[in-house]
Image 1 (cartoon, rainbow, N blue to C red):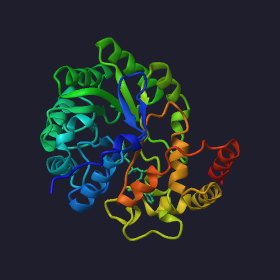
Image 2 (cartoon, helix red, strand yellow; image 1 turned 135 degrees about the vertical axis):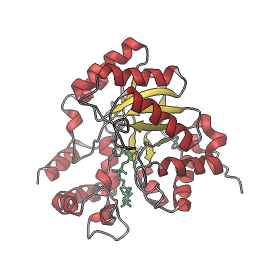
Image 3 (cartoon, rainbow, N blue to C red; image 1 turned 90 degrees about the vertical axis):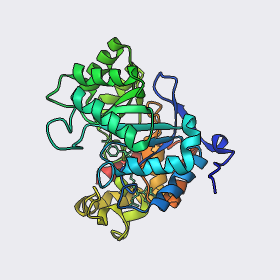
Image 4 (cartoon, protein in one colour; image 1 turned 180 degrees about the vertical axis):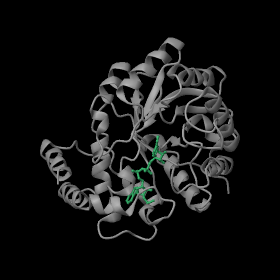
Length: 329
Ligand code: NDP
């Protein structure tokens, strides 16, 4: 049967303006890095994407290399568009990226015009799209002039293959420079995608100031520290978890290393009457410079729990202090 999205999705959904642009993003967006590859079950992916859209999540984040195997998340997303979401294309913000190794040889990674333009073409083919809403430079390239990388992003917008452009994991200084180049080209930098969560706060050391000054949005990835900031690892490493999977990016040693902090943070969450995942998301979204928290998930239940974090009371100064104290353990 054809998929019909929930009719009240925009009454439930909560949105924020992306920097000083005209584009709004949902407070929680869904990323397809893990659990959407060729090794994963398509029906579970379909259930998650349907549920997300039903709840007003309009933004889905991909990259050329998501899988495994690389490229398969975009291919699977094409299938989900074909079966469910394509009639709603104008209600979706779909992003992809290029920067990490995607094919052999000198043109298959980093930030050259050669790589970015051909990778975008490949991504559009894999997803069966005419354009993506946001195309990112996935990482700064120390060996390619920033003018070339930003010029390629500008070219993608001018050729109609992307509506907006963004950068990921650029430092404060690199972001300032990239924003100036893009502004001069007439294609403003829409958004920055950095890692940011309770356990990793590097963006507070200069980057958020630049984003505020430049009117660039911010969509933190790994707001749950790949699952560390959830109830997933409070007792053990479950067999179906990212840390237990051979292709999972989260190492068991990291679970071990963070255990004492996670336990303390879980106690703060319990004191507030929320789950650790909900606390972590409320913490990431506490500042106006943050546009959206970019989560991953392996089940509908996780997305449901995470969405329930939205709209809660602001964290008190005592709770913020307790979170800081837990991190200092
Ligand atoms: P998160 O920090 O949100 O971690 C997601 C994982 O946490 C899930 O896969 C799941 O683990 C677990 N989880 C989520 N919700 C719950 C819950 N309520 N209860 C228990 N466990 C939960 O983000 P990701 O690391 O997945 O990254 C999110 C997105 O960010 C990616 O999909 C990608 O789009 C983007 N990204 C971008 C990068 C970049 O360089 N620009 C780098 C990394 C990510 P499990 O699978 O074990 O169930």
